Amino acid sequence: MSDAFRYYSCVFKISACKIHTSRAIMLKNANVAFPFTVEASSHGYGPRVENKIFDQESYRAVGEKIAHSLDPFTNILLKLPKR
Image 1 (spheres, helix red, strand yellow):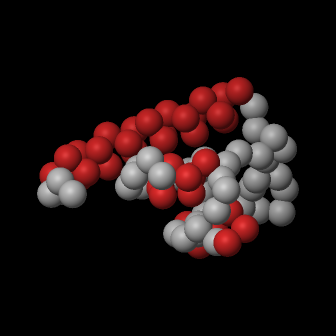
Image 2 (cartoon, rainbow, N blue to C red; image 1 turned 30 degrees about the vertical axis):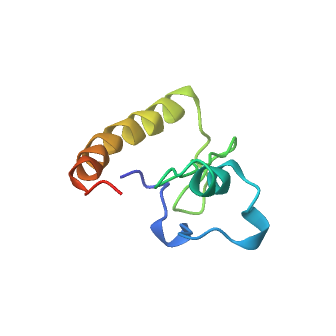
Image 3 (tube, rainbow, N blue to C red; image 1 turned 180 degrees about the vertical axis):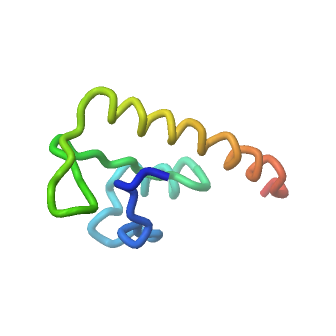
């Protein structure tokens, strides 16, 4: 997992101020079971005092990690009973 990912910052509910976002609409109206949003900074984040500036390679690496995480997740979903 990337050192820029912070699980403790994740929110696993849709608050009232977010009900008109695409994620909330996909969950409610399109019956998408696990909609999610990937947020990115144009400046960067670092776990230390200094910030890491994101560049093209940083975004590519994050995209690769997201893509790799979707395969096991998809395999889990395929094993769930149909609803």
